[in-house]
Image (tube, rainbow, N blue to C red; front, top):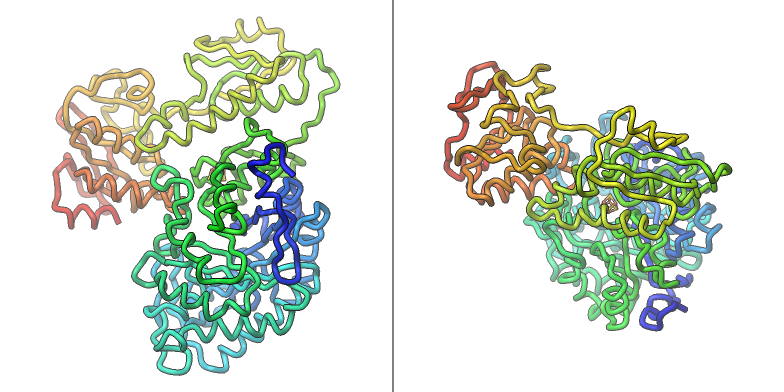
Length: 625
Ligand code: SF4
């Protein structure tokens, strides 16, 4: 049991069909990124650390299972792929956890650009999320429905045969089963469309057949979005109706909310969604099922988790991000190591990276590097020469993490020095922008850890040069000073500075001049340039709106904060800016600035002067993309 009886309820076993989970921590699947999907040993090492940290269930996926849907994530379309994937349950079992696999058919979300075959969906309707939905799908014929169901069962059998304990018949996030259930995506007039019973048929039949095939050996889980919170999905009433209809076939319900067209509701970035946001919907399910339920919501508070289980709101606390940030969350709660918990800050950098590279985490730099670099969140190679001194220059997140790890490794003395009077680097001021306060936890966590390390010393307000660096007589010097925004406006779009952008002038300010040096803005009207496409430009604009300025944001990218799209922050920031009266100009390249304003070029090189004109709401919304 746990160090405090208050949390014992989280460590009671729970029966899930033919399996028993050792405690109430249910690890959800998430995108590991193409880099790890193609390297099963890397993925296995990542999942193994989560199992080692005490999660009773570790879910892998998503995993497609037909040749024509193999496009993102794992694939179990052949015996060869199954043989390779066997390493995943094996690695999870080594630490005593149950291994679950989320089997997925993307339906209209898929693309046929690799195999050049039609994408299959209930009806011939393009998907509604811009970053998917590229292909017009083919409405499935009855034979194709049978083929997909047959393939699903074959994949479930493969999953069982390679050692998975649980198979998740996935119907969340707008995939094929939710498309069948959706009154919008399903326009069929046969036995699989029209009434609720008909729309539910595809998923029900599949769960039934999976249960028949593997139900004696494996737990059958269904993941359902209990409210898509959008016009094209399934609402709470119909989702509860489905849960009642399928309850006899399912061993556990895995509950989420949202759909891909509004994925921010599922991703719940912390500046817009509090911990447990989804419970407003998922908390209503228990009254409609006799089976255990697992529900998520970036749950990081042990007290809240214990209350949810104790009060019968959920049976298992589900988590993706909380376990990425802190794989040892269950073990640290059990043993009372609360101060050392790396709490997920809801920044969604993991989601951003899971689409394009491989997973990473602001709070847990070891995530994704468990095998390639041999990193572990709790184990550190002890240094042989423990008398060595190390100097870390720069107290931003990277310098703080570096000093923490070197301190834990046992170096004689680790000097962490920063020129500014506060730790945190850019993140210190960024977390003071509207809504980003939770991000400061990344600084606080490391600072608290360093405070417990007697061999790490911190010096603030000291700018080092070559001579002063030598004065530390350090054997190793780590430069963690990061980068600064170009004060002259150097842009990728022109490969040149913005003419007239002299930072010495009163009307030209960099991000640091504004937020660190406190340089005043000599007027009411401001143009913010979002050159990099991350969050900083949009967040600064929001700060300036809150300070009472008339703000226009100009970005050469086709949409403001384009690289923050997958984390769910960007659409929220754009909406908030527009609602606050700011103007967003996407696809404009700023080329010159003077005392009277800014000159930009549009896509075909026409000059646009001073794009700070308040527009009607419709124009503004159009420009925001
Ligand atoms: Fe949480 Fe951010 Fe880490 Fe993702 S990257 S798990 S949101 S702290």
